[in-house]
Image (tube, rainbow, N blue to C red; front, side, top):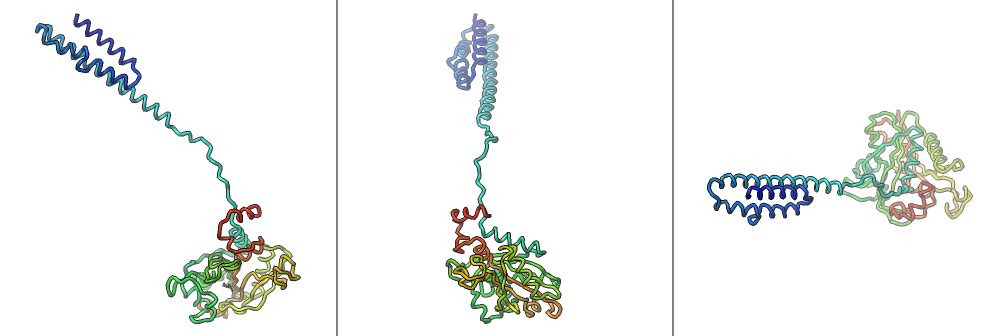
Length: 345
Ligand code: PHE
């Protein structure tokens, strides 16, 4: 009778365990079949009332059933846990095939467009691009360019000093000295685009920071005709075949003779207008033949070698090319300004 009862409980437990589908349900079954007040456990506690010969067998059977139910619950628990984890992992997968938000490509600042154009023109003429530090020594920014201490030309190129002998370069010309020292007496044909700094007013045509492209050619038998032809070709490529150039005598301590280069005004074609202040020309760069002192100081014999150098203001060219009225617009990153030059760029 008791045995039948136990078998019934066993069958019922196994049935309910295998058909339960959540861990909560399993917890309930644990209480139902294995807790102190469950039918099975109450049978265990009545073992003492049985005659000794039945007691042993019944005890064994009860314990077996208890262990099997426990085991079945545990196995089912594991099975459910695994299934729940798989469901969770599936529901949390990310669909990486979702198309991303469209990123709009910006336009280049006209400054960089012009810088690249100028660079390309000179690369096509066989120049190489050189580089140099923006934080310069007094030695390279001035001394090696024939501008000794107390030279009045230093007044026009006051700058930001980091220490007595360390400063933000006032022009890209120190790259001339660096290149000459590195080239060790060999011929040179380089340009160097880069940032320059000067103490200056910040207004529509002046900025404490601007950029130049330095040019330097050194070889045997270089004369001012080479300088003129090089710059003429540059101007025609940059501004169009109709543009003429004019060389005016000027002064730089590191070139002799020195020239200021003007181009015919785009607005009036050379007749004279408000753009060119009635002169028909607009100044775009400075240059000249490398001064013998500069050649000597940087390792070249001026009796054997000669060369020319020039410095082009990049913003100046961009302003003339695109008719921009304020140099500060290059640096402010105002999208209303930048978008205007996007198509042209
Ligand atoms: N470095 C000069 C300036 O900044 C320009 C220049 C470069 C002149 C090379 C002559 C030769 O004004």
